Amino acid sequence: MSGSWSMVFLDVVWVVALTTGCWLGVSAVVADGPRRVIAYVVTAGLALLIGTALPLRYFLLRQRREAQVRESLLSLESERRQFETRLVRALDMAPDQHAAVSVAVEAIGLLTPTACGELLLADSSRAHMQVAGATPATACGGACHCDVATPSGCPAVRSGHAVHYDDSRLLDACPQLRGRSDEPISALCVPLSVAGSTVGVMHLVRPVGDDFDDRETTALTTLAKLVGSRIGLVTAMAQSQLQASTDPLTGLLNRRSLENEVRPLLQEGLTLAVILADLDHFKILNDTFGHDAGDRALRTFARVLRQTVRDNDLICRYGGEEFVVVCPGADKNAAAMVFERVRMELSAMLNDGRHPPFTVSAGVSDSNDATTLAEMVSIADTSLMKAKADGRNRTVVFDGAA
Image (tube, rainbow, N blue to C red; front, side, top):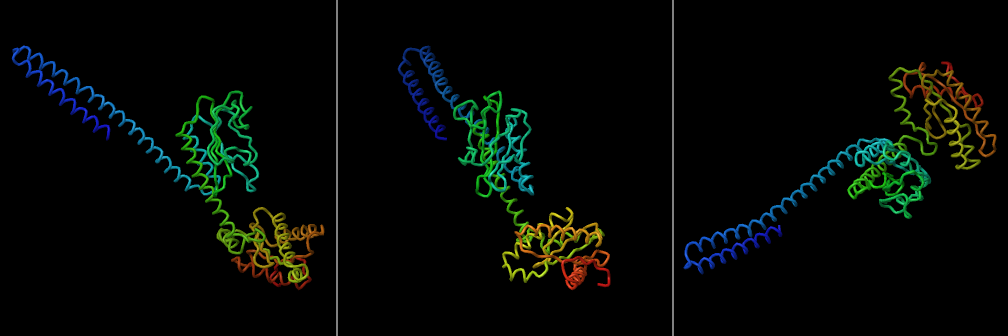
């Protein structure tokens, strides 16, 4: 706007000066006759036209160029915001880390179609880097893969900001780029922060000469921030759901989660067997060896259950020293055979002398004895009491007369 006013001021001054000059010239030569007057008027008119039109044309062309630049910038900004809006919506629909990584890989392909890239994340111990997702290696072949083994081994992760390498042959290029390809490559590495901690990197490569510009770097940095935020959120949600559905000591299902898992199975009319197991003399175990030993016994028994029962069986710490195993598609006799294997595996594990000695008793029922989980557990409890009365360390199957 300041340029517009300055140009208007100059045009006004120019017009006033030329008009004054023409008027003085005409006044001075008016006695010389009409031909001289006509000549001065034409000359002054041409001078006025040229002197005014050239600056005005320059001004209009400059305004047009500025308008085109502004329009281009507004168009790019609109496209950027539209892409970010779509990206946020896509990430919001990602239910877990795998889905969020898939969205990130697709976004990388849209932002940098001539580059190939991959997303590396630290494992649960945050000691090793693993490839979580990668774009098709079209531009640079196998040169896309980064062999960095740990988060601390990545310069971008250590620095906490995007790092650009123009040429893998240069002295200050990342050591992970050297020798990766017969042809020199350029790279862009953007760190990925999850829950405020930098635990990954977005790694992209291109042939030398096709450099990453500032617009791509900014877009990929924004992508990394959004993906990191989503991964942090879904990870926290998964941990919260896990904590709400499992027993914190053993990691097994809690009672509420077991009921939720069994309900649809019963609705389908599937045959179920229920094993109710209880650690024998658990109070004596606690009093003799201490509560730490009791907790260790519970964890040991939970581990034996996980290692011995079938993959589709549901294992639950029902409360205290009681455990419930639900065996879909099995009757009570088959479930009793499963638990006999559990008792043998437990006995073998306790022979190492590193665990306090204990035994387990169990009662077994199935869906032929009752129609609800609570009724089957109650019937299995009746058999469990008989196992206790018969000397413990045994499995009793409900036969209707227990």
